[in-house]
Image (cartoon, rainbow, N blue to C red; front, side):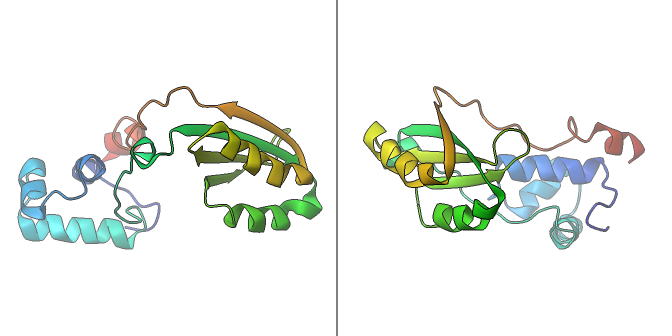
Amino acid sequence: MDRFGSIDTKDLKILEALQANARVPLSELGRSVGLSQPAISERVKRLEEAGIIEGYGARINPRALGLGLMALVRLRTSHEHIKTCLKRFSEIPHIVEVHRVTGDDCFVLKVLVPAPEDLETIVDRIAGFGAVTTSLVLRSEPARPIGKDLIRKKTERG
């Protein structure tokens, strides 16, 4: 299987199960998919080697850590500031995601802070690079897993 290789329905079931609970024992994962433990181990290894599974991690609740305010900050800047902006963003721990985008803006930043004044400080730090627009996130819906519904065409072939 190459990086964009074909995956079958069992692979998709594995991916869906691991996205729901990456700590599931391989023996249990194998039973749920209908494969032996050696077979499930081999499939997971192939998915990792192909770059489809990039890693495993914990989902952290920012609110439980006192970071209850989430904002999406858009920045429109000029091309000569792109590298400087990226460096500045990396120096601000409350900027947890950086997306370089097309359209009117150059960047969309996901920012987690405890209070509005902390957000103001961050906005002030990056406003020197261009026009800033900030949106407070009222609620986020859970991310949808990548699985058979998204990759329907591949499952129909597999």
